[in-house]
Image 1 (cartoon, rainbow, N blue to C red):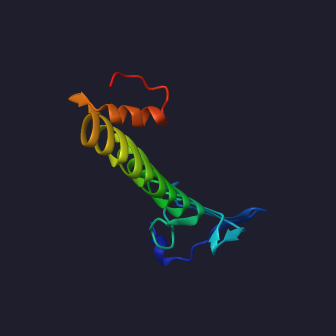
Image 2: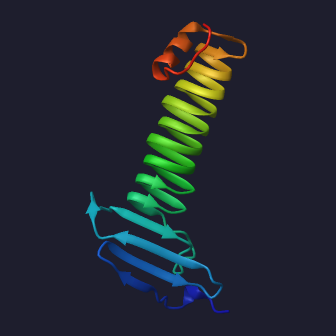
Length: 175
């Protein structure tokens, strides 16, 4: 088998009214695809999608755009295994406003491990207000919690119940 990195790469390129597709099929059946929208804002494409390894470098291309989708993604809304953006969704997601993922950050974070500035929900979570199995923060509703106002299996502070009832009126419990 020839080394594709030493050969000229021929992509199948398709122009649509929305953007450009660039595709390459490896002899093994694996596929590389990339879509870049024509519309741009702040020097970034409105949508950038990547899939597979680039045949020119053998590496994954980082999707960068207002909406970025790929294994690695950076953008306003970033979706990928590892993502970073204002809103980030992925296994490892670094969100500025909102993060959703296994390990996530953000002003609001929802994930297995959620590190939030204001509000976090997760198995393990920390932030100003958290709901978690293991939580730390100012207002904590958890199986095991640490912080100023905690409601956990060890006892319940009525201040934390009042706080969460304001956010979630359907919650009931005894202070």
